[in-house]
Length: 427
Image (cartoon, rainbow, N blue to C red; front, side, top):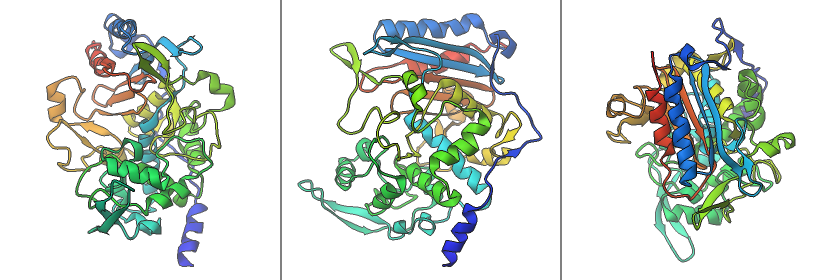
């Protein structure tokens, strides 16, 4: 009874964002020279992407570069839909898949700032089904049956946000046993047109075994989907509504959705793959590729369900470069962002030049010194359908490269783009 009263109280709290005494301008277009960037050197991005399209490395892309809050480069290349031969446009909408994770993590930290939980709280405090965590012990390849043993400790919110919970990741899991278990249990990984909710999905997920004891290793997982449901519990609102009211509308992100409105469907880029060296529309037996525009539209995957544009996502990243504020609206405190950008996984990635914070992969000193990854503190991630981004706080620079492909073999445009953005700085 006490727990019910607590959650009813939480659900009535006003979650509206506060005004800030800081007031940065929304992103706007300006000449590269006004932001200390070379027009001539930015043109190297044109040459690189056009060459990649000619060589059939990619079918098309939208690229955006901003510096000091000014968009200095925003162009579209190639084809958005092979079936209709539609040219790519700057306002094209892309399935951003795992780029959703940073937005969900941001929402978690917005609730954390309200003092509603601690990061090392066990998730079972809010989703009781996770209380008896089990680790996979034996597995029968014939029928996907298995045995388990109790985990040494419980999954915490910090474990979920840093992919150290031990939870698996369905059809993209590196361990085939987990792919089979998740498929047999009917777990939805991100993309579906079926009438299912994240509450139903996460409660099923909680009954499945873990890869390892929480906190002991890193394994990319559906933990951020668990946090999507956690946000619904604490806020008392569906995840899509919370995002719209407290992130998208305040920031002016009008083209970011779990399910694209019908009036904007024509802007959604088709997923393309390569067959006999020719581009064709991609289809899958594992998930519905048109999930953003069809089906029940009831499943809000915090780990991979959003679609967006290059400019909208740049707006989100600019809020981070502004230490949590945009256009006079405070999303997160500067002190919270500083904490989020710290190393929250210790040495679990080894000495690779980067680490995982509370929303992004972050470049460390070694990463800066090896070249091509930006300054120390640069944060980045990408998405399953070949979208990539980075933001460099030292240089106040954002780079976003949106593509929509899968199973295409070698694609060097991601690292080339990041390198070309850096070399265009001219101040």
